[in-house]
Length: 107
Image (tube, rainbow, N blue to C red; front, side, top):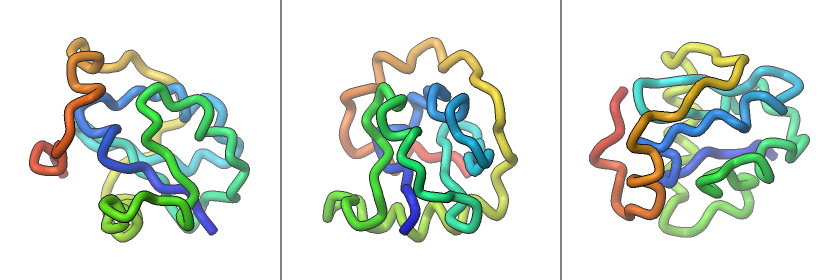
């Protein structure tokens, strides 16, 4: 099983999770993070660190977010590795509780 970043991360892109990852499995896009399923070791450390509560175990991804399992795997191939925490976008807190953010995902 791997962990999956879901819609709550879009346009928030807090990177607290990156700091605790022992295998550097996070990948960074313009406004979204993903977890590379080939690198993730299922340690669970990132889940508690995510202010957006966007990270789930693959088996626990909410039904309406299931497509993010494949999306993480797809985007992990083109997004760049991120291994250190960065500042969140200035408007991250404004986007935190917005629903339906998939249309804003930048590849």
